[in-house]
Image 1 (cartoon, rainbow, N blue to C red):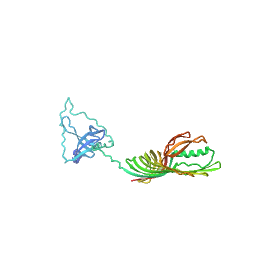
Image 2: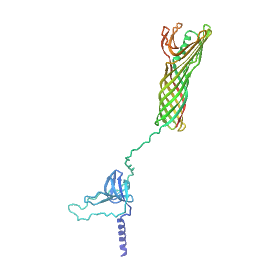
Image 3: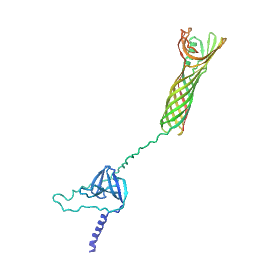
Image 4: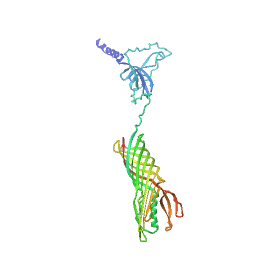
Length: 415
């Protein structure tokens, strides 16, 4: 008899153990569905009956957690009975929780009623879907905070650029006068040796203080110095007599510049740069000329000043040695003309009294030679405008053209 009841006793013990509630810590939680479709099961088992399907974003109340399952409280049915189910933790996220003392939950079960012939006592069975693997979905980010996000502003920085290089200037009227003198001697059939050199090549150096407003934009204030000069001699022989002309023109200008800078990084070591702006030039032009022959000597000297407003721009490349020092190579172009040049003039010739004129203006005109029949560009220094005659035409104030370009090499220090 004992052997026949032993299996029955084991079955009863196992059934009681399965029906006992699991020992968990009671925890009231507010859950949010984080996947498109979350299944609410009757038991904490993926193979149990599905009571309903909840959608993404739906909020559920949970009174405790059993392992990987949350027990959730669903809406009461039509008769007011509380319905509970289980949802897997991978389908929800906890948005609020509160620990409470464990209290036994009294589940209200429906009393068995006598079968009704007209209406079935139980709803039709819900088909049980086979267990499917729970998809691994990315967690839904929490809602954005109502506090506005602040973006830190760019800290204003400063840099100092120092440069030096070679400059080329057009000079214009001065060069035309020197070339006209050479052409005159050649047209007369004089044996000429040598050539006048125009004051076009010179030096260009300066510095600039730059305020870096953004990583790519800056404003700079700078100053510079340009100079171009030439000293050349032309020898000629005419009818057995020797003549020698020596010209020594010199041009200098101090520049004040206001620039806008643009900077574009090209990797970690190089930056492309571009800048442009306005320049104000304080210019000085001096003219020293000597004429020597077997008959007489001539020497004239003049130095005039004028100011000019122009514009300029440049393109360059920076090589960064460190975060604070860079090597700069750039090409630079300018447009400006010195007009209204005035200065003291002196003229000396053998066997004649010296002449001098205060505040003599630089004039330009074309002079016609009766010997050659051609006109030649000419400059003159006088306090009155030359009158136009049959041998003088196109009279105007002379110009010294600062327009040209420079090639610069420099260093930039950031701080």
